Image (cartoon, rainbow, N blue to C red; front, side, top):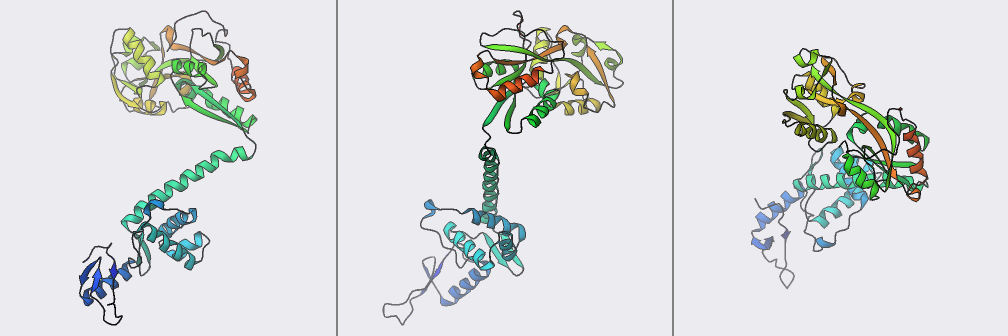
Length: 368
């Protein structure tokens, strides 16, 4: 059988009466073979497909992309056309022109509908991706059509994101529906550098040093606690020293996360290795694996309020550095604090629980 990409052609002699030999893809073949090949092409949907001489100048219509997706989902040209509010004849014409421009069939015509060819499966994947990107673009730009021009970039460490910050941001966004907030998790020293450099409007950090260009406002305080499986010897105590924890395998967040970096630094300072048995992407997974007996973990106490504690013992970490004070860092220059940023800063400062020190603190070593 000839390859599906071959093209059948016939030529007439110069006199116009005697036909020259039939050709398939430029090769002379017998008339019988040519007739069989044409019949095969008609049943497989290949008869109309010819490589486009201008494949480098293809232009795609959104209607065509949506039509490909609709036909693939429906398995039928007529039903796919109806989903795109097109007449079946119009949809068939669009599909034929698209296939001709691509030089490859997208669908195999069958008795009860159509099925995707290999090229069709590739095309479908790209169509879905293109349409999804366009929908996201529309969603991102829609607020600006309604007069929204306020965008706040907020960087925060993992402790804040996993505990207090979501609720506080929810209150702010309900009060300011026209403001958009871009929230990113970073290490505290990266957050300080980003706010100072203008890459972020505000940051939430654990930080005890001063910075010439930034002011640090009290936000919240939190405490690191140890979680251990019920029944483990470590779990029978009311509090535990970090040195005792280092004798056990750890369930930790991924490398590079704020908590993991912080705990590894404390283990290094103690001159002991941190035996990380498994790393996961979030605090709920840490607690679940601790419950399953994979090891112990260290998490913020505030996180445990929202997690299932069945089968898990929570112990105080008897270390001075276990209490961590969260601060909002903002530019000292008032010109850099726009109206929406000022409103968010006020919202976050309203939640100071009184445990954090004043904004202007004496220089001490950064907590992380």
